[in-house]
Image (cartoon, rainbow, N blue to C red):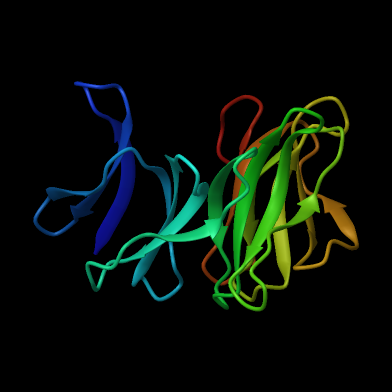
Length: 191
């Protein structure tokens, strides 16, 4: 019923998160100087990226209350963005840009010590991580063979890996039932 999106404020050029009521086609501002919103599985919270000096850059906020933003990742030196929230509610998938390794995929657990851990941290660029509906697999794009291709690995611990695309691909996402993957091919067609 609601779509979360970010757009630049024309006054200051900073991103803001907005919520659109689909039935009424009305927009309301959710957060200033924030971007990359990702819904919780129950639709009650949003994870998002915001630069807050001294606090980190990954936060969550309830839509059901006026509670303050909760810091989910306080690593101030890394530039992370949420990409997905596992359907079991246990992990937020982050895309982190690090000077030494480029784009990496990290997991921010929402249990235990809540300390983010790398899922894929290689010399290649990985991103657009999406967890399968049963929370057993992760699909993502990687430049490991010289161009971006789509892969699937076990989740939350990387293991057996299967390459899905063969002629380039990006921005993968799962079907609702988890039986199909959709992605954009190198020629910009949806596959």
